[in-house]
Image (tube, rainbow, N blue to C red; front, side, top):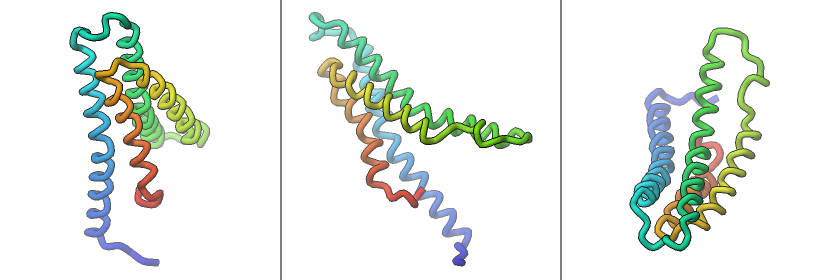
Length: 142
């Protein structure tokens, strides 16, 4: 068994958090940019006002897809640190959560494709970037 020194563990944890923040920052910035652009009064979308509503729904779905794992993490953490006996069925099921997230991302991607032109690209990229990050990242790094 190979033991790591405390310095190696700290450096590894720092790199893991840097990778996580690097993966989260651009999609969140793109969502904020799309939201700011949606808050402006419409200029070119006078013929299709429903597209703005669709863009807001895509933005809400995107937010839900990002917030769901954090809510599950906080719920599991508080349950495990509550000081009482916790059974496995009380914790959030990871596979079920991933299925829900995949469905929300797919619906948000379809809605983002129907959004107005000026927010379509940021909404689509903010949905696709985390997927590519998790695909490229080796499973054992986190």
